[in-house]
Picture 1 (cartoon, rainbow, N blue to C red):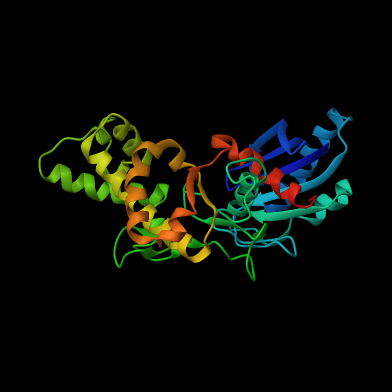
Picture 2: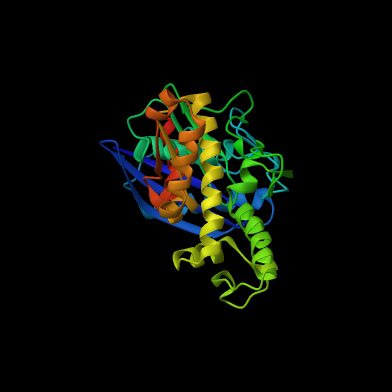
Length: 321
């Protein structure tokens, strides 16, 4: 039995969790979250003090390791956060040493896609595989790679940055690049593409449930599109079906390059799988090599909406295997 601590650092919120690992099963015991303090020093101090308080309230816990999950870019070998977009003041911040010094256990940091990949590999839909791709498919899209039975992060932690890859010459923008994977397959990308389609639709004098709340076209969100699709709104369905096709194009590319046993997809795919899966599979069948396609499954995240709670714990768990 092992006790692990997970530290999740976000642009608006932070969380500290303690989990128990027993017989290769994970149990989330306690979690505390709070708004991200201004400035990296204040935030790291608050995270360390929160974990100290949690451990003092549960003296039976003997901590084994601390895992930290944060948006990239970062240097996992040196334990540094390198000014990610959601934490612009965190430039070269050492987040590992404070936890090692405070708790006298090993600590490590990984970007959030890698952390989620580890969690799904240890405890979720990728369990028992040696080659797995995890796709975030949330606010943005990125990949965490488990290759030949270990996390692969590349030369400088930039492996898996699939969102910037251009799928078409033109299309919604992501990573400052039109037609990119993130432009088509992310919360922001779907909303931008959806607004264009709503404007065209309304310009033809047609009505759509996407505007059910009475908002302007400029205010349309991915959630609005998803809710309308669940009510079988034809425009919303067509938007998500096109998203599914572009997801299939990206998955086929990754499958052919990496030959994984499973591609695990989180967030939006969890909520809209019924609509996205058919178009996705059609394009995978068109684009991927037959042998690749036949050996690879595409599944939703096994840890579901709780994946984020376990991601940082898995970074700690990776230190103990």
